[in-house]
Amino acid sequence: MKAIVVEGYGGAETLTLADVPIPEPGEGEALVKLARAGVNFIDIYTRSGLYARSDTYAQTPPMVIGMEGAGEVAALGPGAGDLAEGDRVAYCLSLGSYAEYATVPAWKLVKVPHGVPLDIAAALQLQGSTAHYLTQTLFALGPGHWCLVHAGAGGVGQLVIQLAKARGATVIATVGGAEKAGIARARGADHVIDYRQTDFVAAVGEITGGNGVDVVYDSVGKDTIKGSLKCLKPRGVLSNNGASSGAVTAIDPMDLAEAGS
Image (tube, rainbow, N blue to C red):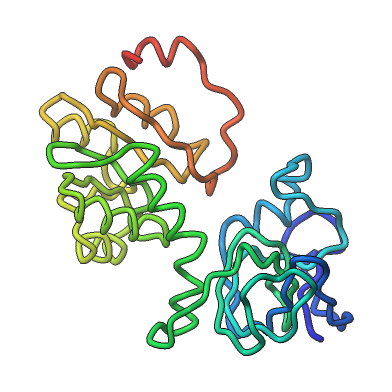
């Protein structure tokens, strides 16, 4: 089968289209013939070596990257539960979706209803699970709450905006550029800040009358994390759920104190 292989950690130049054997499903696994593979920032983190020490995302180059996909069950290993060959399925957080086939733990596979296209099913796995967790578990948004969503036109950002509005919260989104501002507004954002034109900390202060927000969802990381702290109400909640500008390596306790946390 064709697959995208990373021979060693590094930049995009490490990605190679290769012919590799079709994997065989082991105990509790299914072989999925992939129709769609998600392309996600987590793939950059994997390829670059950011997660090299991670036990959660265990990996050893050379490897096929890609953490989410959708397709049909092509074969089953022993103990694969109630799955059957031909089932339409989607999944996330299982390495190897940049390929024609992937073996996936059966418990991670979600059966896709026939009315749901496989591209939508693949896109909703990792990003949808993240958005759901952020808005309903990490901080259970509700009427009266204010939230700040960085990268509001991104995959997770668009879903967070929609879920936050569905739960009755007021949403402030940051974006880079007029086109992305339109996307965030179309998803329901009440206020949109173009960080290229405006200091987002000052803008949040003005929008909230100096009160700040209950929760910040920060998928940008290094470039925004200190500003995100300043946007919070005292004892507010800050989620660092991405690192598109680079990883956050430390938080200064003085910054926490100054933010009222």
